[in-house]
Length: 386
Ligand code: SF4
Ligand code: SF4
Image 1 (cartoon, rainbow, N blue to C red):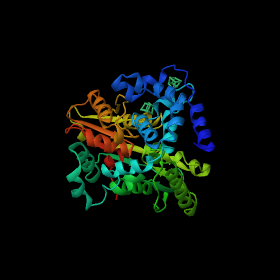
Image 2: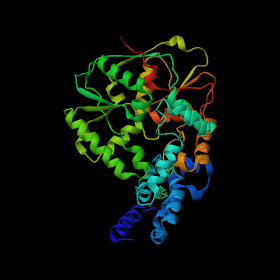
Image 3: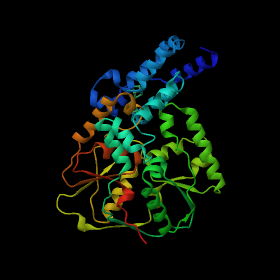
Image 4: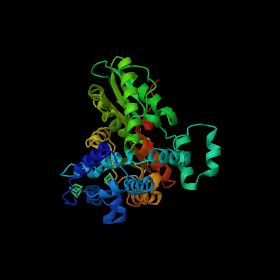
């Protein structure tokens, strides 16, 4: 191992300053469904602190790669542990750094992504080909990607922006390639609210997925591309409708870029909500699914707006939906366990409609939901004004 790598490892180990308080155990979805201490964030922190085995196996590529895969595959990357840790131990960030150093990790990860059809599923001609090779569970993801459900829109958002600011939409990869109707709706809504809308450029990925996958060079490349595009547009406000993309963009190493990121609901704060109450027959329930990466106050804003329009909006039990991190790729059974736990503990009936603000959560919930439950991104229930 060369000196630079050794010092990089030492830096990672020194960031895992775990005092074993156990606070992260209460929030970790993997620990919640398995009750296995060895899969908990605390165990990962302790392991990282004592990872001299990494140094030993660095000379043996395959062993290191296997160890890294094993560790990385047991985290959903939700970041809940980091938010409660009194020592600021950030397990997903540390795992990401470790993965980035693993020989062969990058090739292995891309191979898996392609195998499961995540990155090519938007190509029309590939759907029938992929369908022949995917398991029934994976096909559901492909269907959710390729054929989004169409809910009847029942929310009208009206108002004028306090000032006609220049804005540009960041739709995220799903919003751009798989579900362009979300991008169209977002742009129309902003125009109707009086914002000066700039044309959406060829954004690169927000970088979040690359970061959690340990592909840090790719993340950096995306940040650079997005920064250049934003500069060329004259530095407008960047509006995103995906909670996870917002986090990805906020990780940008360009401070000025970061300062111009606005989440969509902040622009809607002064607008009025009008809801078609005729859709609310008896037993109709609307649940808000809070994405792991959403800001704390997001649900409160939505709840307040719905209440003003005379409709109760409930929060689900704040469980992780099971998408994210490498769990889907490496430990699919564990991912399924997290997802099953989510649905088992949700108070749903045959007329439940789940709304969310993360493109990835919407995909995951649609691919795993019981048939009678409807799942939408909130933009899909917004009525389109002419
Ligand atoms: S919350 Fe932080 S300090 Fe406490 S056990 Fe978890 S990782 Fe360790
Ligand atoms: S990021 Fe989420 S899944 Fe991973 S260890 Fe932390 S709480 Fe558990």
